[in-house]
Length: 508
Picture 1 (cartoon, rainbow, N blue to C red):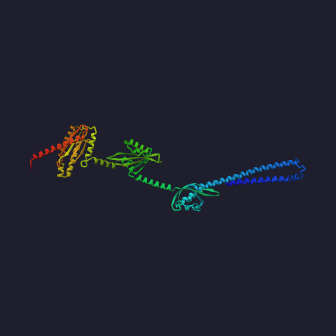
Picture 2 (cartoon, one colour; picture 1 turned 90 degrees about the horizontal axis):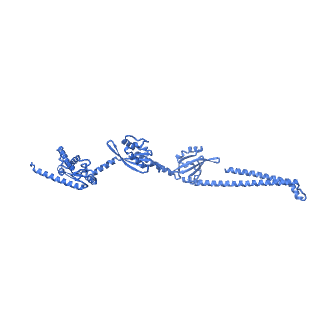
Picture 3 (cartoon, rainbow, N blue to C red; picture 1 turned 60 degrees about the vertical axis):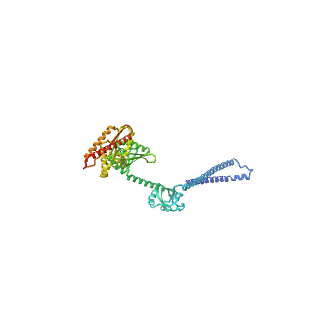
């Protein structure tokens, strides 16, 4: 553009110069043609030379001179304007060059100019700094001096594409002056400079980004490994309740629980039994609203009862908008069984498998606040347990206690609370049972004792001292105390009778 302007200005100046010189020559000729008349007029002023012919010739000459001078003035103005425009163009060019030089040097990206054979022609400060060199040190270097072998192997193909006029983008690895390798994002193309072609390349250091990507890839790989190998069931469910992903454990549990495998795109409702549909929808919607939800469900599979914990968590693909739900399922069967066992052990007597004293007292306190009155209490004490332990051994004594528990269990209802409350003492809470019914229960106990002893003559007989009392309102503690007293009274009477009959028997 600048050369073209210079050529135009120069051409105009040359043309104007020719015209001006032509006009000057014309004026000189005109002056020479009238020189004789002018000299005569000067030497012989008394002679009147300026006749009509001379006047016309002089006027014509003056008019021509005036025209010529006007034309010369116009062209001089044009020359001055052309020179001014040329100066402004030069100043604009200098400003443009200064701006480009400033942008080139201050750009945050590294800028590189190469010859077509890969020689470094110019670099900016950023490019030199990211490699650890000065700008001067990089002059004349070869691109292959900077590229790692892997990056350098792609030079021929990249040069072919660039020289074909293609603007390319790629990632490269360069050596720093200290030997470490860093990553770059490169944009490269060809620019014409006069009759030559140069390669212009922009470089951005992406080392930190690459490291972050590598960490993310490792993290994703770890998460995929956890997802695939975890003992938990994992499923990713979209907004339409379609299963988008699942692990092997989830599939195995689906087969075990529902008798079928999971398939991508299946509705999650195929894994939800009808009675749990409403609860599932509520929990799923809470997760879509951004909440974390935990719930527990049991499933009957044949004779087994399976327990699962369900954890619903929102999935935010862009960090904000919820795009689905991550469902993790933990097999809680063993934990639930252990909890049941612990609860059982905390409430049951380990020897007889009936309730223990702690549970009995808890139930008695609860029934005190209930409306199941009248409530009766029966106290039973095993006779001769100490004698059995001393003479026949503790194993026999333990059997005697187990037989007692089984006999009492066969008499009372499931709603009654049968417990072993002491070494040889048992108690029964009978809600909604009056005094008459309680006494009938005592008769049934005696009947079952007799039946057991008759059916097992080879075992030590089971004998019980019994007492009962009824609470009409919430005075169960008083009823318990009274039933205990009546049991000891019954024991004393039974003991007295046994002593009386033992004294009457003949000595052998």
